[in-house]
Image (cartoon, rainbow, N blue to C red; front, side, top):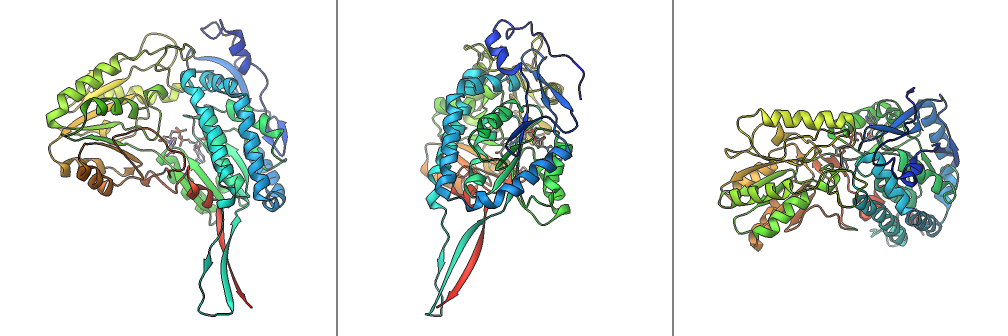
Length: 501
Ligand code: NAD
């Protein structure tokens, strides 16, 4: 598609030839067990967000490639579904081992593609490995039920049937982690998968494809990069894909739901965005709450996390202290080259996302109701860098920065006076993904856990995902739960069997 040349990168990365070699090579997608180019021959440039240079070129999959991948997945589905679940689990375990063995390379690949500091990216491959092993370990838990019958000479039980082909669409904020971890449950449940990574960050998914081609039977896993509006839509509307699992923005998620329904009755699960509150009550351990507010923003991923607690609501008695301390900590963060071990926060993922986040900065800076506490600037250097930014709204939350998901290193803060006011503010938005509550009162903690309308609540904690704990949203933040046994069951359909004997 693009005609620009592969760059001879004269940047921080240019000084590290071994790092550049990781991505400066031919890339192919995985269809039916073969590594292949796009049928059209189209390609997409891969831009390093740290210096805006083109560092690789990948095949740009289109409708024809999605069709071929779905065909391969449909053909492979019966044999994979008939493979014993113990053997399917063994394949996941082998894939986890291959990822672990290539973890350093995969972390660098994601850093060059996505901009998150490499020391942080190392955690992503570890999470992917842990999730693959977690689901492999659940294999013998995927049982059905027996249902008591009035008829003495009868037995009623359920089987868990796979759907067939699962279309899996992922975003760019944790490229390898999502690509590897989010195929575990559908594959274990006996489905075959067509994975479409985000166009901004497909490299590690393609590398995963190369590793998987040696381990996973042909057609069981297919990986096709491409534009959401072309490859994504084709996958969502394909008549042979009855199960769609989507992670991305709420706007796209709603479109996916509508487009899927326009093609057929499909099962669609959605992991979407959030504008998540972190509430510091008057009796909180203030030092811990400040730590929690910093961790909750996931600044080390440039705030690019669905679960980021990007609305800081603080009891008025603590407001000034908490806001100025969080602002001081944000100002102390080292923004810079994600290849450097000392870097705390790297560049945003892409030029488009930089334009979006900086437009929110301009909105905030021109809003008389908001005080700038930290950041608010972008350094004069190549790369999509934004300083971690904190706005305070002393007269209460209002305006788009309090309502809309920015998905960047931008935090907004406002005071509250009562429990009821805090919960009302927290629940005021059409999002409901996560919430974090800071208090030393058992009553306040339990009441908030009951009253907050989100899919996930941390008490005196933030940011962490806990293996086995179901993650997902309510309202416009999503449908379905992932990372626990519910995710696994969500890739099966119960079939009831009634037997008279
Ligand atoms: P996005 O919705 O723009 O894109 C996500 C994926 O959907 C990409 O692969 C994209 O190519 C594809 N896509 C785009 N349009 C499509 C269409 N019409 N049909 C099918 N596929 C399409 O989101 P993004 O900007 O890549 O990611 C950021 C968003 O993801 C944020 O809103 C964030 O909160 C959300 N997110 C949610 C979770 C969660 O677990 N809830 C996790 C990570 C990110």
